[in-house]
Image (cartoon, rainbow, N blue to C red; front, side):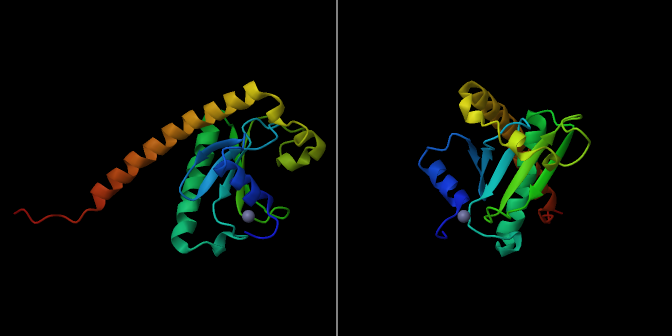
Length: 171
Ligand SMILES: [Zn+2]
């Protein structure tokens, strides 16, 4: 861990059961709700390792991280009835690799475009922790969708394994 990394600190809070935004631990990362829910359902997927670029992850971890992110964003779409998902990996402020997953709804910005066209004080002026009932409801909704998406993927993997098994010589 570097001298100061906000995301490593947030992960430490998850491990100490003290991060109110925590939703789910997956193999390569942590699913958390964003502090601000101006765009309701705004979710983050934080890499477990402190790396600053996707390509700094080992090949196997990189693929698994991408697959898990894809499942998390699908769950997010399902949970919050997104008309469109926006997915971003930026890290210009906090360099630790993390995905921003935004369920978007028609008309949620003044003009169709990225959420960043909305003033930052509006986006970040809505700390969901101030409303515990809402935070609990959003986490429960996302967790239920994650259960469904992750279970489906397990079944798909099982099917793929069967399909790719070498044919046995029974003749
Ligand atoms: Zn970090």
